[in-house]
Amino acid sequence: MSAHMNRPEIGRYQIRLHGQLDESWSDWFEGFTLTNESDGTTTLTGPITDQAALHGLLRRVGDLGVTLISVNVLPSTNPHPKEH
Image (cartoon, rainbow, N blue to C red; front, side):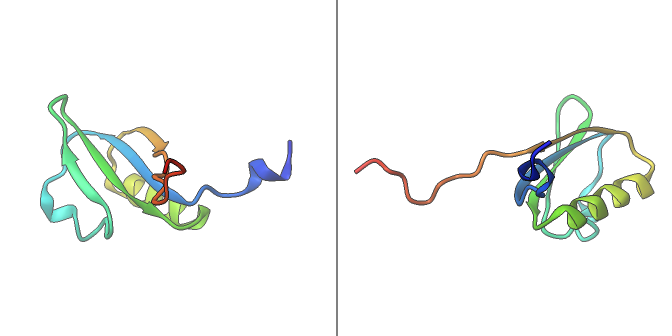
């Protein structure tokens, strides 16, 4: 295992939960957008600064007692494309 694999991913994450959370939970997940999907799930989308922040967010999800479906790192968007 290389040292690179041990580094935390810093960027935007998408976390899917079973069930739907209403907008009153937005403050609890500060910095994240809550989206209720048509399939009965909730998607949280927002920035994670380091591995500790990710674990903290996952603890909050666990404290709610909802089922975690997935955690995905979103592709970064390059503000300076190489095309001229």
